[in-house]
Image 1: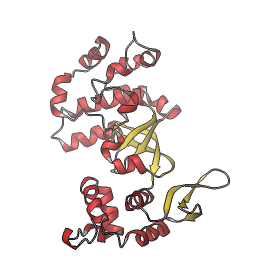
Image 2 (image 1 turned 30 degrees about the horizontal axis):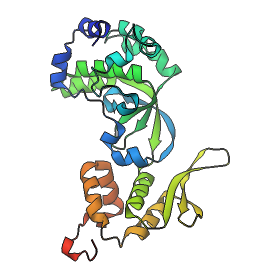
Image 3 (image 1 turned 180 degrees about the vertical axis):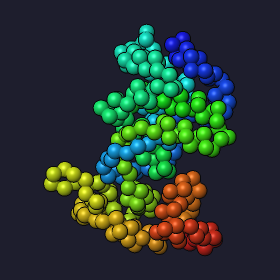
Image 4 (image 1 turned 30 degrees about the vertical axis):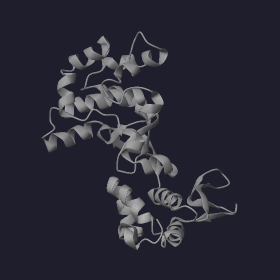
Length: 274
C-alpha cells in the first residue's frame, strides 16, 4: 500500500492488519454471490434508493484486473503518482471517517453510485462509483472491526454509511425461469429477453423467442406456467437443480414457491435414462 493510503488509515486510527483479522475484506464479484443472476440476470429498470455500504459487497474485479482484497485494491484507485484514473480522486483521502459521508454528499446527488442487485439481498457496483465505494467500504470495515460483537453499534454504523444510489433491478422470477429452461434443454425456447414498448421503455412482460423463430410477449405468471409445462416431466432436472438450491437461498425460495417437485430428487435407479 502506498504511503498516502497508509497514512489515511493511520490518521483515522486504524491498523490494516488488525482490521483484516476481524472482518471479511474480500471484494465479491457478482458471480461469487449468485452465478445464476450474474449469468442470466433479467434487468427490468432502475430505481433510486438508500443503500448501506455494508450491503454493497463488491464488483467484478476480474474486469478491472485488480486485487479482490479491499485494502490491497486501494493503490489501484488512489495514487498521486499514478495514471489519471488513479490521481483523479486522491483528494478524497483528505476526509476522515467522521466527515466523509457529508463531504461526498453532493457527489451522491450529482453522480450517484450505480449498483446492481445480486439476488441475495445485497448489491455490487455496476457502472459508476468504484473510487467512492472502495474508500467507504474500507472505512466501514475498519469501524465495524471495532464493534463486531455489538449489534446495536453495528446497526448504527450501517445507518451511518447509508447513501442514495441508483440500483439496476433484477426480476428473479424471469431470471430463474430463463435459467431453468436453458438447463432443461430441448424445450423449444431459444431465448427470454427484456421487452420494450414503442418508446423503448421496459415493460413488465418478457419476450420469448421459440426455436422456430416465432416470438411471444408473456407475463411473469405465464412464463412460470410455460416453464412448468416444459420441465415437469424432466427426470434429470432435480439432480441438476439441487446444487443451485443448496448454494443460493433466493433460488431455493423460488423453487419452493413454484416448482417444489424439483426438490424431490428421485432414486437414481428410478431414472430410466442417464
